[in-house]
Image (cartoon, rainbow, N blue to C red; front, side, top):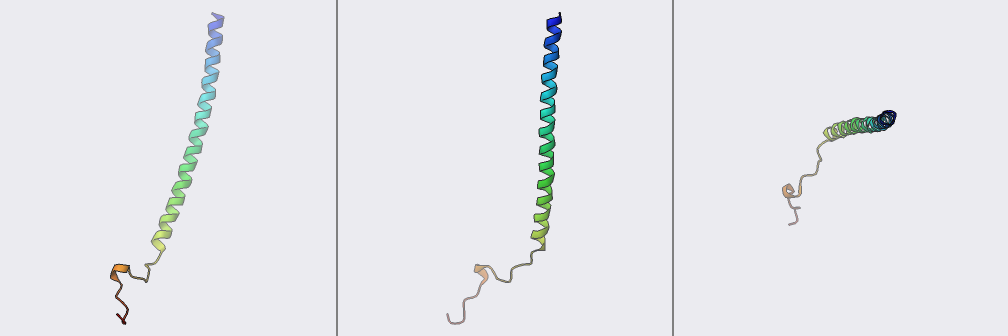
Length: 67
């Protein structure tokens, strides 16, 4: 009986350690997701702030007058 109790305690200790490792991994992933969301929002803001290019696309460019 005591051997079984010891085995259960050992398993519980290992499970607690595993749970803590998974919790830390989850925290790191959430922090990464939040950082990436902030970066994405910054890129979106910068992209929307960029003015349209004054150069027309090649298909819309008129040939120079000497043609």
